[in-house]
Length: 62
Image 1 (cartoon, one colour):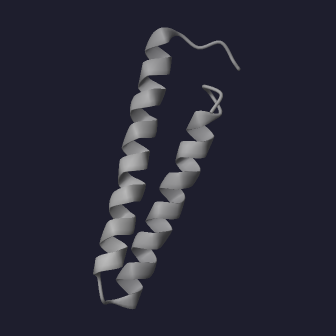
Image 2 (tube, helix red, strand yellow):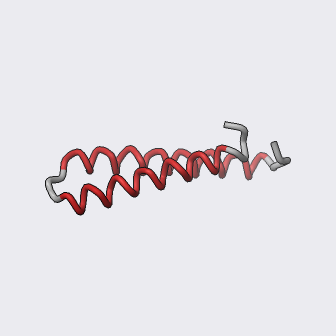
């Protein structure tokens, strides 16, 4: 794990939490819409947020 300060660690945790929330909300919304294009967009947003969580997690050893 690279050396990061406590402030950077807290910022990463905050960003990870925000991305997880975005992914969860996008999945819920995708499950509720009827429009296939909107559903596909929301599912893509959820996948992107999941990827961001993984990338950010690498800095804190998740």
